[in-house]
Length: 229
Image (cartoon, rainbow, N blue to C red):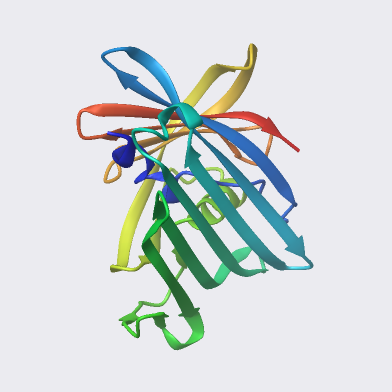
């Protein structure tokens, strides 16, 4: 079960939006089980900005209590530029470990102007003209578009990973006030049906994700922001 919990980590992080602002946040991960809603892991994300260039990283791992059952960690890095309000990705990498064994270790170089992306194992994927992002920077693009296109209710992106390029649709589903750290936060709810993913994005903080809810099989998981700077 713990492995399934972390399969979606690469698609649930975001950061403050445009113009890009340096950001660091901590999240707790909960799983709804027969024993109740249990905290099973943590994640830290960090966005560094130099002029219009960004480096966005995540570091997720199981809690020490769970390591005896499943010792898992995953780090990701997304590099690119923000040009005229648009995210332009150039690089993405993933390292995934179970205990000390590396299960995934790949890099993707993105050549948007040449309409292709190539992986570190030599596979090349053709892409169509338009927005191409990776599984981290898609949320930078989403936040940016929701700011600049407040009347639009649906956003579609090309997303590249080691298996290729696919389209994902994110639908704006309305307002929702949620309780975080004993404070009520105004959010906009966004749904991606294909991923069975629901995002609560803060309307006061450039649509930064406050809570993420995802269903994997028969189990529901929730990622909640606990601290940011």
